[in-house]
Length: 120
Image (cartoon, rainbow, N blue to C red; front, side, top):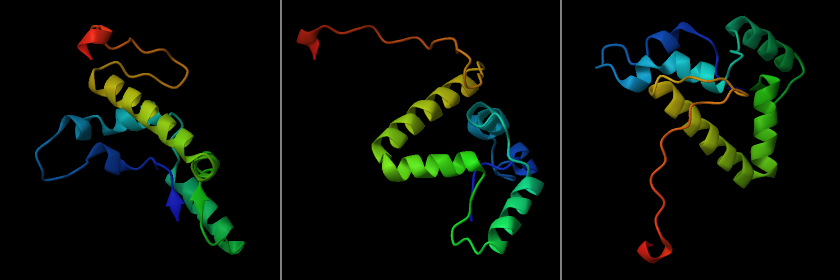
């Protein structure tokens, strides 16, 4: 079973009993920035039961997670590049208070000054 992010209450209380971190506090916002259509647990259960009835060896759910899996298998470098770019963007926007959804433009983060070729 390989589920994508599932919308459960655990997102609201990551690491109980441990000191709070910025990432744990922003877990739900980060999930919504990277997965704007959360996967409900009851839908996941239905998908699992359906695929088990078809004797599926590896269950990847939902369909968008299967698409990402296929991309990672057939074009791993592209999948890795996209994953790093989208994860960094979501993390940056979530921790700086500028959450965005896919398709929305975020306020650009300040860029370091360009260095001349001789400085490299």
